[in-house]
Image 1 (cartoon, rainbow, N blue to C red):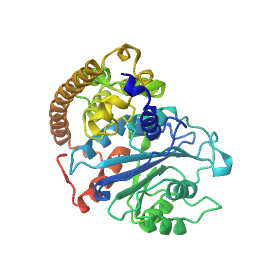
Image 2: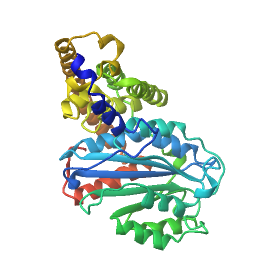
Image 3: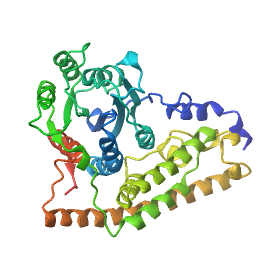
Length: 380
């Protein structure tokens, strides 16, 4: 494989695409069809009283993604995560932090969600909206679905250095819809400023009890789905130390999901089997997408067990991993369909609609906008 040793530049470029060299970097993004792109920024209040809200976001992240995976045509999904209201965030930014810029790396979003720690601070909704509008690299096309969800439990207009009306105009100038999620009763006086923000930014207002927001139905299919999701990890071939690090993150997010509930682990497995889960550090995905040529890889960037393989042996191994991954994915998706049907029947039986939960609000707003853009969904 000597011919590969002089072509390290291609692999270095591939790794840079995944944002490994600088931690959390904005990944280059140039969609072929902006009309099939969905971008969602989630801004969570991480002040001391918001632990239940953070837990709800962790619990239901994968379930929301899975609903998007059922859309036709299958979209490209980018998600950003912002936090505000924690004294651990920088004072000079108004206690706001962009935890993850818009990215296709859903494991990174999950990783950062589990690293959020609530703590006292100033809850400046205006400042976090400003960060979402100005600091995130939104796709520059009116055809792209672009949404910001801001959730918190204090007045939205208390920021002394920002004007919600001006920020709403700036958001609409980038074709962003801003959805305001007030964690409290709709009759609370603080809710009024959230309603006004949603109206000004062409979004939706919702009031939820964040303490009761972390709900996800469990089913008889969850255990097997989680086990298959773990088996998927064995089909990934990481490139370099950075790739190995991301493989470790993948396994860690499996454990994080399992720590919450069997249902969360199952919905994460469904995401991993679906079209919205692609890892740029993985050689199998990179070859299938055409991002790299097998014969341009430096041996040193391969896992140690593969470095002594001939070109033919390596090609055969990658093909085996691809076929195994496809087989496991098909099993998960078959169980996912049964799981979805089971959940829908149980919800109908118990007359539950989930509209007052955090994920229900996110799901409802996304569903409304994708339908307006002409997407069709298999979701019940």
